[in-house]
Length: 246
Length: 58
Image 1 (cartoon, each protein chain N blue to C red):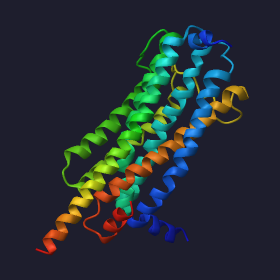
Image 2 (cartoon, helix red, strand yellow; image 1 turned 135 degrees about the vertical axis):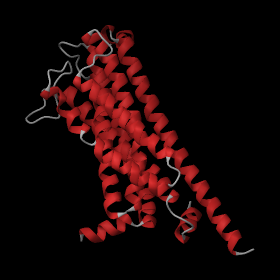
Image 3 (cartoon, helix red, strand yellow; image 1 turned 90 degrees about the vertical axis):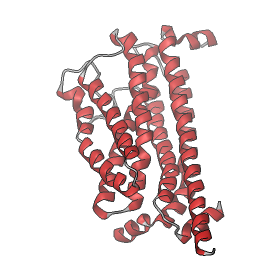
């Protein structure tokens, strides 16, 4: 059963059609969730007892930081699948992840700096969490640079896949940095065992933003991956059929 | 809650609003970039098909 699914998903024409059909089912719910999250987070969540209204940065910062890690895991996993099973669709997905992940890592860093200035008194500190997140940005940029430097697409896929897989060690380092080391960054409030330490009026908009950003990422990924699948196919008949339908 | 105090964000306006502006920018640009990338790939694919057809039937 799983193998049938795996092969169907790995077939470029099937993936292309499925991705096109699925994109709006991720995009529109993402828009609704983010609209609710922004309105409730900015207008209706109570101010934090220590951070006042400055805490509202969390509704952008935490989802952006979450995406920066999730996108990397998706990228490294699909790169590994592409490398092991020589699956072009998986390589197409991996290649599509990098620009999205890089932009959300940059957003997480920038919003973190905007939060750090009033709360810590500094935009930047060479702290474990901040440094490892900056390294994540360089990993994304290195991955994209490596791909751009290699002319042949299938060689670029294989070489960049190795980089993506090696770089995955940074993901747990980022996640556990606030626990392993004495970091300036606060410990997790939501993504931890037990109940989140936040009232519902604060928490619900945050959960909506986390889910909204994730669905938005899937919609972006499906759109980009369709293009990447087309790039990897050479004069196949299904392409002219698929293009004729659009 | 009046509008002035809402925009003042309890004194954190200069940090909170740029944050949301940057997020809107990143979210918007990603949509533009993703669509542009797909469109470019479609254009290339059309060109490849046209070239292979013209090569097959001289």
